[in-house]
Length: 93
Image (tube, rainbow, N blue to C red; front, side):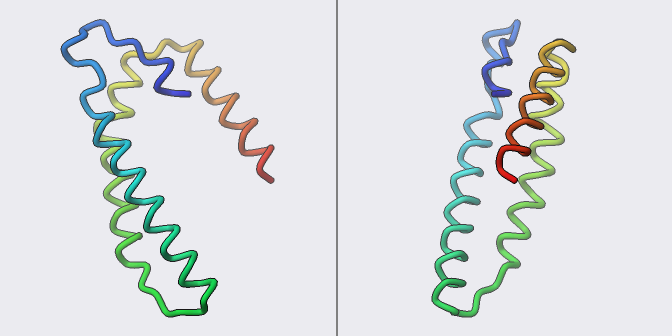
C-alpha cells in the first residue's frame, strides 16, 4: 500500500531502497518459516539471527525508506495509509 502511494518527482532516484527492502522481507519471512517448522517439530532453535535481522531491518526502514516516503507522500495519503493499516490489524484479530 505504501509503495503505491510513492511517486517520486525525480525518476533517477525512484525506488532506490525498495529492492533491498523487499529482499530483506524475503529473508525475514523465510527465517520465520524455518523457525515455525522447528517449533512444530519441537526442535530447539536460536532466535538471535532473527532478532538481529529485525533490528537491522527496522533501522534500514527508519533511516532510509520511511525518511524518503515521509518527504514524498502528502498528508492526505499518509492518513489513508494509517487508516488502512489500522483496518488490516483489526481484521486479523
